[in-house]
Image (cartoon, rainbow, N blue to C red):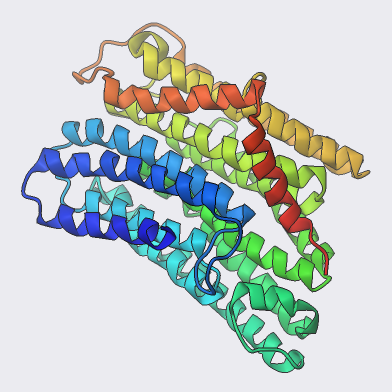
Length: 475
């Protein structure tokens, strides 16, 4: 079943290349997205731990799989309405690339071998580059090349980290020489510590580039700013979660070897730096999609801080991963609608969106409240849980610094979002109006985040506890 989950999007991508009908090709996306979500639910419900040396699901990958599949399904529904409006650009490339992207993310999530994980993450880079270039203008080609260059450098560093870990096994002692994750975890105490530490640093830097942790985030504002809204949502909510999972595999390995404290300190440092830089660059930001890119940097930092603190904060980070993915879907899709209506994403032209586009403008405004951790949305609960873990661990200065930076983010982001949404309605040259297919997905994502703020279902609580516990296992 898991192998089918990985392979069937590739088969649908091949079918998309052969289909001559534009509309039928577009509808392949929601059909495959819905089927993928159903199969993912079956796999998550029926799988405990790794089912083979190469692919399998544990508590961490189950959580990331269901979140990524849910986000993709919502974006796939949105894509039908979006592609109907963009017939001038065609869908012969974007539909197969989205399907290959889904397959690659699924493989990366399910990989139980570090080499296979690396290959899958690299495939996501190749599959998503044409998606960023979809608008085919000067800015999009610049963003695509920056994305390819920086992420390729990052993934090369991650490969070097994997080689260092293999060498740590070679010189470490009497243990099997393998990159299979379970084998490495079982024999982690025998790994050569200097080579293991070097491998972790390179994995953190390499996959941290893909995740968008500062100071490795410089591709994000351009890529998110120039890509279609649904692509930005998949990058900010899906791909970053996959890259975070890859980093957590390295954290697992360090923890099993007895060096979890070093790994957590490194994550904590990068997390605080990400939060600081995001807060600075979000002040007086005139571009609503670049604003969301810096918001993504912020929330990657919060995830890193949660895992870096450990304990209750790790549970909060797992919950934050879910909330962030859904809220980014809501924000990027509604921001795409606003950009299309105004033919701009800059504040010099975008204002009064709440009156001009009541649904998309309202969802975007509510999404701002959600992403900044305002109650009663789910991100308030996850950020509050992380802060409880920080203060409960005695890290008072870190907790106070995080609160200060979150306040800066709220003020900086609020100034841009309120300017874009408030004011008198604008007479638009564009004939764009909100339609069912373009607003249903962001609305549902927003409702899910609201629900997670007032009620956390027991199956999700259990999944979060199991995922957090997996990172706390000591040798």
